[in-house]
Image (cartoon, rainbow, N blue to C red):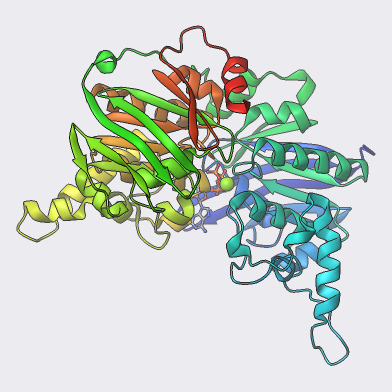
Length: 500
Ligand SMILES: Nc1ncnc2c1ncn2[C@@H]1O[C@H](COP(=O)(O)OP(=O)(O)OP(=O)(O)O)[C@@H](O)[C@H]1O
Ligand SMILES: [Mg+2]
């Protein structure tokens, strides 16, 4: 770390209509440091990064970069000046190749301006070596999983003579292995004197890679600390303004019911589902743990009528059901909060109200002879906005203008509102701040107390161990172990089964 001040931001203000996204924000960055930026959903982290990288323009304040005031008009200008960004929500062109995406806007061209394709692919192959992805450069981005897409966003920043790279929740959809690679890369960038702004809700990560941390709350600066002088608990209380008991206390009465609400028998699909059997009882929260690729998500998609079920039987409240499509599953009373919520879960150009009430508009309509009951819709939307503390001016705001984490919350609310008998949550707390995580755990318990059967797919062991009544461990498309009781269970033990 050379320690010189590379960037100093003072008095940054940004308004979106009536929303004060940044209020007198301050921040500084030294050469070769990893400076984490944390705060609750909607605190203004992404807005700040987007201002630095030219996506948005500030209303007032100053950003001084290498002694010069900056105010980029667009992202390309920022990248050319050495400020790169890996966005929270992936913005690649799915129908173009990996190579074209990496060099978007700066293709190598000949004298007549025609693209030199051979050079493009050669350069891309070289760049892609960073993550052993050189074999993928001719593939379309649409063919790749989220992890690889995220890594392409990283590669895009590496092709310039970059001085600052801002990562906006880069690990949200990376596997442990990919995360480790990203951290190795960050170490290398640091060694070259490149400064990193690192946004994450996974506070454990800060202790692995950050030198300092700055906390934002409601768009305003709370404080900056050296990582070695601060504890996780202190960061959390700076973020939420109070001490927090993340997992709360479990006061449920229904969790010991014997009644089975949901059962699958010998589920098989070509998509890595190799003979799955399990049951869910009334009021039970069943955790599904496993490594990326262990078949958890594929199993849930098969159950939900998505992704082709080849064999197996599904029973809802003892009755055999033949689920033909996700819509059919919803009608039967099965809900699924997908992992990839922003692309599958919400409609960005619609309001919060319409998103939340969408899956059950039919039911509301039936009540009133074909007319949608607007008052009822509004009431339900407001209830969930309050329960999940969605940060928004009102229920008519478009989901697309919410912060990333608040979009996640709307997607969760949408499925809670369907009032299904069985609800599957795939990674419900990805991208969600610690305060809201606690709210979501509480909500899961309330649903359980109402007698719903709940399935929670999660890669975060602390939440699996603390929230679930029973744990199924997945590996190679099978359930390799079941814990009927989570009392005294350790993370190491569960991981042992997951790894085999
Ligand atoms: N394009 C926009 N139009 C209107 N409001 C916006 C827009 N972008 C952000 N906001 C609002 O600004 C505030 C800050 O949002 P921002 O995305 O910066 O939060 P964040 O800290 O990144 O949160 P998260 O952890 O959920 O990603 C939020 O209230 C959000 O709704
Ligand atoms: Mg954000």
